[in-house]
Image (tube, rainbow, N blue to C red; front, side, top):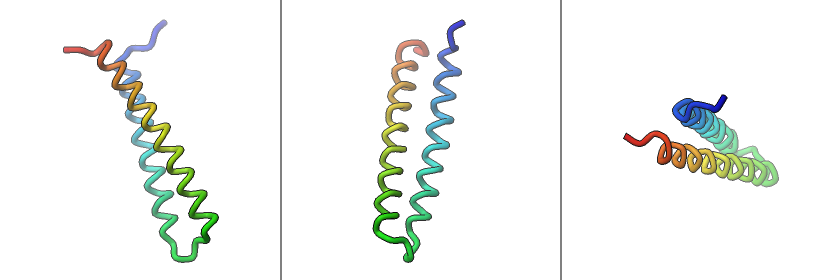
Amino acid sequence: MENDPKDTVQRLFAEVTAQLEDAAMAALKGQSPWIDANKARAAATAIRDNLAEVDRKLDAAEMIAARYLQD
């Protein structure tokens, strides 16, 4: 059975929201004046990777919406 496009889009948006929250928390943790440069670089890399995944999911949601959820 194929996934309902609306359910897929909603799931993708929920995943994006969770990933953005995680990225925000990681960024806040990185604001500590006691963090060292290596930890800051690792946090920045993790956030970039997270945002790249968010971008892919938003692209997928947009394509699904354009194809299946037209008014």
